Picture 1 (tube, rainbow, N blue to C red):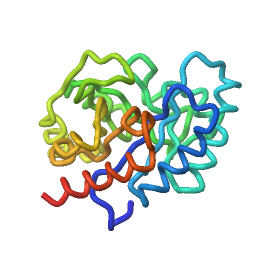
Picture 2: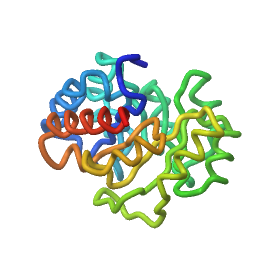
Picture 3: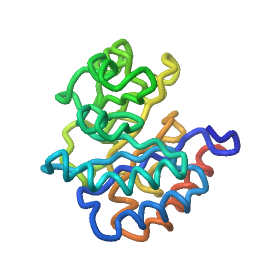
Picture 4: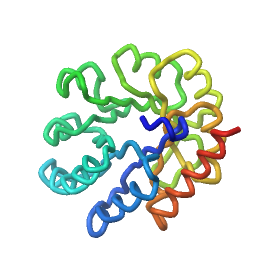
Length: 214
């Protein structure tokens, strides 16, 4: 971790469509943050593993070149095939212990915990490297039924050393409250990819730095 950066870092989540010029957009987004982007999640749906691997290859190369963790959403098998840095598991996507056996000691394993302290503690006990809470705000990326309060991040940070990720409808305008509450990462998708990705990342960096200084 870069000691000159704010405590909270940016975790980019891909749009479902990563074809066309998306690799160039990813590179621009990461470069615009001057180190604040430390993880990228490859999240595609409905593709066979061969096609997903083909689309992942240039994105993974961009991340490796920039020392950004390349995390695969949902699929332990795809993460293993790609030798990805890790996998992000939803509550129905498998057990962190099994993922660890498949991916090895160094893999980064994250678990979606919605608004649940119990699920987060279970994930930590099962060996997760980070837990993700959300959606904190209404999201256009996916339907949300869980809406935790920022205090959940504070509670987690005071009791546990495992990093926590805030997700769901986060923008430069509203991320400050999550930074102040103790989010180690803010995970963002639409707020970056629905417009000028480089400007969005710069706006996030400025908002995070401002909130970190309070």
